[in-house]
Image 1 (cartoon, helix red, strand yellow):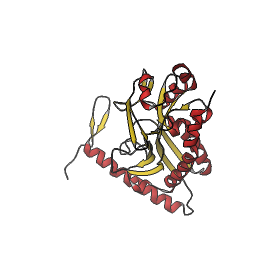
Image 2 (tube, one colour):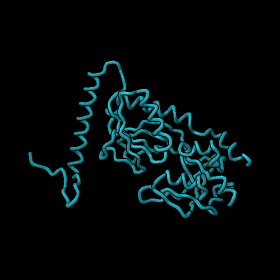
Image 3 (tube, helix red, strand yellow):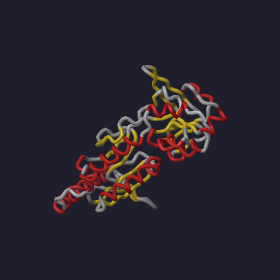
Image 4 (tube, one colour):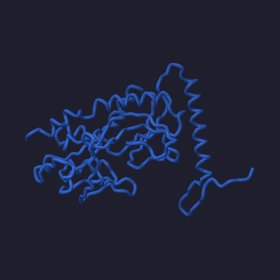
Length: 270
């Protein structure tokens, strides 16, 4: 058969060709099948073992998931974890990972999606100090007069914030003096009193419970932000991944701030 170039060499780097990416995908599938067979033969007692290579969102990963993974490994001491923290859309075909934990559905419909927190939504929030200086917006349209902390995903700024109340939808294009591609930075800015953030409820649940942030416009529902585990092939869903999904789903369900509690936080007086 004719030879095909699998990569292109530059002065200081290498890049896979399209044929190289296809070949790499098949190699990974073969190695995964070999590992699955080895684990099946070596472990007949359903012990969770092996290595999970996982990509986590920056804010959620640092502040919630990493401590949870400590607990998960304590339950399964024969399991190894390799963790990547990034807000980039992880290329599960190209990155050296098995699964990625990501908000929303992936743009590639061929990927396998395992729901972790399907009902999670965004929450509008700000620190008590910021609200004391500027006043509290009562409706989404009032955000136009506030400093809003925006998130950069790829080359696009997420500056159009959407809300629902009953059957009515409201879309507001916001402005602010701070933008970051790191969700952790946006949350830190909000806690420090620099403006209003529109974050996943999972990201800010601890801050809301502790009073470091206050939920705003609770009668308006924020847009959906379902949390999912994503992988390239269903054969990658081994016992360790299934156990991890169930573990994370239980922790997320116990973490999200209930809607009634959010209303109480908004109505709290200093």
